[in-house]
Length: 280
Image (cartoon, rainbow, N blue to C red):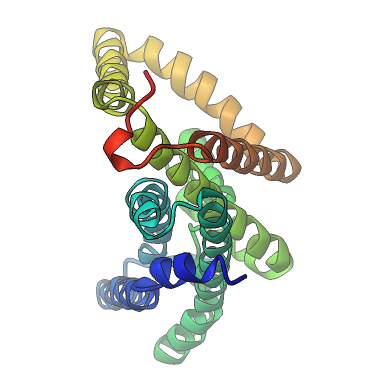
């Protein structure tokens, strides 16, 4: 454990400050959204219950992937200057990712009943929160929207049922969702550290831009064929696959394992920063 201490101190130097700031931003965004919904009566009503849709907690996924990229690139570079013990750094980094995402998960899940209690006191009615942190909830939302333009009501009802009857599963799936994007982020950071700069630009900027342009051109050329092929075809099949809870868990674990292994292979013998970007 002594070999991990320098890296643990480095990785946690600003972690609690950042976590506090993230929580404050999330609470502010959600609180402002709820107030505006109440004032403007824009909340959903399902079976006499008020349904509010949280927006701030979705930033947890974004924060997790950015945090992972920084750990695989910037923090790894700093760690090599402290002590070039790659194995100890990777162990510490993975431990920090697991612990931080566990904290994020507990926060995001516990905030749901807290907000529901506060909103119920304010409105005098039963209030429920549709939580979109987990990939399961996001898939549910997209699936209903793709099937029915008024699918939001169906989604919020499903989310309410999931939060009550599948609470433990919701915690597990939220944790795996955050752990998955963190692992992807760290693997991306490791690739940026090892690949030549031109290759990184092509891989992470060039190819995505070309893909988006291709899809936009195809949609503009024949919108009906595009919707039938990509929305009613590929997208629906993918979302139906993700809506199977077992499939989703297996997929997330497979992505986490693959990205973790990829990060280890990329960084276990990586050179110091002056000689980085040594691959293709």
